[in-house]
Length: 200
Image 1 (cartoon, rainbow, N blue to C red):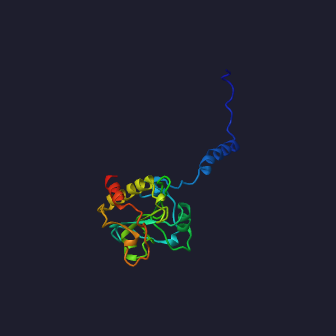
Image 2: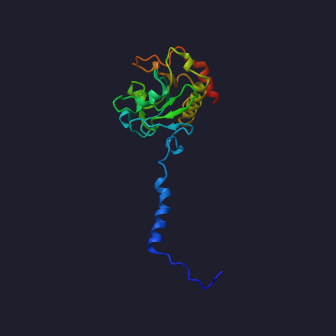
Image 3: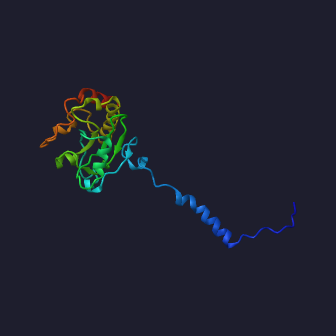
C-alpha cells in the first residue's frame, strides 16, 4: 500500500450527489398506512376514515358523556358501507364497521367525534355506533368471527368509558327513540352477544 498517495479530494459535485442520494429514501417512504395504531381508538381496528361531512367534530367525553353502545346491521356489504361513509353526500356514519367473514374491524370516526348513526341527536352524542356487515333477514352473516370480534370491541369501549356491559347500555338501533329501523333484527343473538362482551 502506497502511504504517500494523496487522499482523493471530495468535490462539491460529489458531496451534493451524496446528499441527494441520502435524501432519496426519505422522499420515497410511503405515507403512514391506514390502521396505524396511533390513528385508531381500538388498536386491532384499521383506520378507514369517513368523510368529514358525515359526522360532527367533537371532544367527547369532555363535551358529551359516552354511556351507550349502539348495535347496527349495515343492510349493505362491508365495502359498500365504507364507501357510503366516505361519500360526503350520504350524511351518515358509524364509528366502526365489523366484517362478516372474519370479524375485521374498520374505524371510520374517532370515538371523540359524533357519528351520525342513531337518527337521534341525543343518542348520537352519547353513544358509540358499531355497524355489522349483513342483512337483518340473513342470519348467515352473523358469523362466529363477527360476534367474537364485535364483542371484544364493545367490551373495550365499555371498559374505557365505564359503561355497564348490559342490555340497558348496549342497545340495538331499533331501541333508539324515534327510529324507524329494525336492526340488528330478530336474528341477532343478544344473549350470546352480551355473554361474549362480558367474557371478552
